[in-house]
Amino acid sequence: MSGWRISRVFSTGLVVLVVAGCGASTPVRYYGLVSVESETHFTVPEDFSISVGPVRMAEYLSRPQIVTRGDGVDVELAEFDRWSEPLAEAFERALSDNLAVLLGSDRVLDFPAQSQTDRGYRLPAQVMRFDTDSAGLAVLEVQWLIKSAEDAHVYPARRSRYTSRVPRPEQYSSVVESLSSLIGAFSRDIAAILAELP
Image (cartoon, rainbow, N blue to C red; front, side):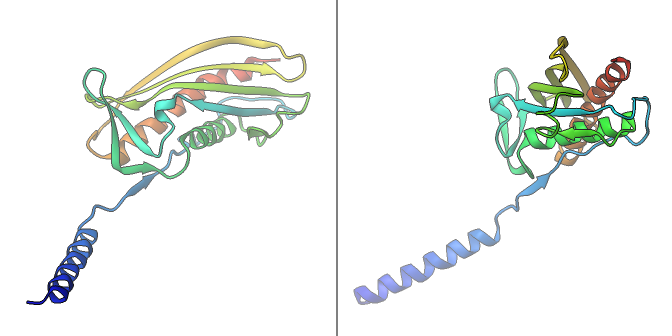
């Protein structure tokens, strides 16, 4: 067989292998955080307003892949299961959506809305941990504070921790639902404090 025919056969075989490999690849699945609150639990004045954010994520979370803690110091990245948008933005929106429902207010806004005004409150947060572990425990650790826009008074900053058991830890849809529920628990604590502020 001549050299050009061998080359042609080899090239054709390579194309077939590449196409076959592409056809068998696992599709990437995308997930988004959701608000979990559906009822108003607290009352705030009509002129109440708050800017939620900025929310900053620990660097290990700032990636499209969903992160899981392995045994010991291992951190695992889901190859085919990813966030549909930057996690900090999704977290911020889920938090503000929950607060809007809990407080019955249409003036709970995502940062930077209201952030340049001299009225209302601001709620920045730093998420230290937001993942599940190898035992199926979902964990949220977050540092946060509430600041008055009028007099720059800062209400005591704190670090909060929330956990919940993931019903089906082998399914990322269940993992994301559990993580969303942790934001709901965080939202309820914040709403209770906001309802008591002047």
